[in-house]
Image (cartoon, rainbow, N blue to C red):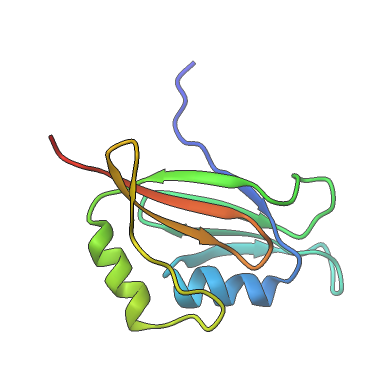
Length: 122
């Protein structure tokens, strides 16, 4: 077996609020969405570069309030991108982590935590 990619599922409760956070602010794009019929929960795939998430309104797909650790490079550019288009519900900062890295901690509108991590170069 060869594992090709891991795609975290994150529980959401409002697809429009999720799109405002992930697409409008964080710069993800919607790859596709699915709804069995009108007035049923959404299931959508979003991505940004090599990072893909499945966002689901379906009860039982996953537990609310997850945390995803995301290794990245050039965290400063990402931070500047976020600062250039402020999100009214969140003002992140870059922090120094005790594990010799710079991080940005974000929490989506549903309590899911995203930790963007850039290790210091030795």
